[in-house]
Each structure stands twice: as structure tokens, then as C-alpha cells.
Image (cartoon, rainbow, N blue to C red):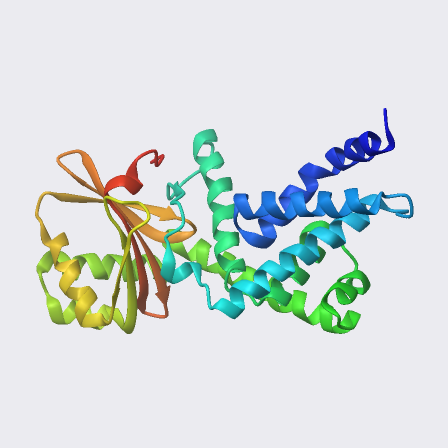
Length: 289
């Protein structure tokens, strides 16, 4: 076995951990694959002879590749929120003692975390993921970010605070104020009460709707415009089933026993700030409670 073969073998031992790191950093399986492959190419070119701690070296290199990708996204103004809906993970309101529901809950927690991480700055995301998930010391994180250890600590703290707040929001999605706001939204829609619908919606509410083509997302902004769309739910044969979707309060809607849509609600205070609606092709393969 050549030295290169031995190096490749040692790298493969690290690959699963690097893949988890890159996916948590980037939120994309394909981009994570590319980042890990780039780490291997850099290791292969270096020869590895002078690397004392291979795991630490690969963590740093992979993190730097991810950081550069995140910064490039930020410079281009890329936002997953406006461009494409995440795949829906649907969980029931009650999961105690249900193995299948518990598995859905685990997937939903992961999806919800990635959605929160998308709202962080590149530096906050890197600092939080490296320290809180992979136990990388702040001194090493600071070097990567070209900042001091205390600055790295503050970045991780801001990321942690947002994740904690999102966790509280997720718990509220089951029975809290978020669910009550969603109920008020559908009550107004069923009554065909346009003015009441508008009052439940934030003035700059954002509706994202996926239709027959999964990659085509329709964007509707503004309370009046979204309320006009929502009046379609006044159909008497529509049945609403409360669920949690990607950590958000939501429903799946059936007509004559057939699922016609999924809707997840971003609730801020006592109003709906955003709606993610899934119909058509995006419903295929979705596991429902």
C-alpha cells in the first residue's frame, strides 16, 4: 500500500464526521459533498507528512471551505427563504410513545435547525456549529474567522440564542399562541371574512407556494393579496388536520379524504408573518401522521 493509499484510508475514517459538519454548515447535501471533496484534494496535495492532528486539520480546512461558500452566498444575496421551500417534515401534535412519530420529530428538529442556521451570518453559523456541535475551542474558531477567542465566543452565543428562541417557538407550535393564530386564520377563511383575514396577517406577510412543478415557487406579498388567496379555504368540504411542519404550526388539508395541500405558518406575536404552502408535486412522498 502506497503512502497515498494510507492517506486516503485515514481520510475515509474522517469522512462521515466531515460530511455532518459540512451539511450542518451549508444545509445542502450536494454542497457538503463538494466541500468534503475539496478538503480531500487539499490533503492529497499536501501529502500529509507534516500534519500532526489529521482530524483537527481536516476540520479546519472543511470549515474554511464552508465559510467561503457561505460568504459567497451572502455577497450574492442568496436567500433560501425567497427562492425555494424546504422539503416538509410533518409531525403530529402528540408523539409520546409513537416510534414513527418520534422519528418524524427527529427529522423535523434537524430541518428546523437548518432553517434557523440559514438566518445567521456566515461567522455566527460557523462559530455556533463548530463549538456547540463539534466542540472546537474558541481559540481555533477565532483563528479560522481571523478574530479573537472572545469575539468567536460572542458569535457562537448569538447563534445559540437564536436556536434556543426557535426551539421555544417550536414548542409553541403545538399548543401555544402560534396555534391559536393559525386557528383564527382558518376561521376567517371559512367564513369568507376578508377584513378579519387581513387583521390576522402582518402587513408584509409573505406567501410562498409550490405547485405542480417542484422548482417553481410562487411568491405573494402583502396582507390583502395573501387574504385574497386564502379565501379558497372557505370550501365546506375541506377538512383541516393540525400538525407541526418543519417545527412550525401547520395543517394538512384534505377534500373527500384526499390530501390537497400542506401549510406551515410563521407566526410573530399575534399575526401570521409568513405561509409556506405545498401542493401538487411537492406532496408526493411526504409522510403524514
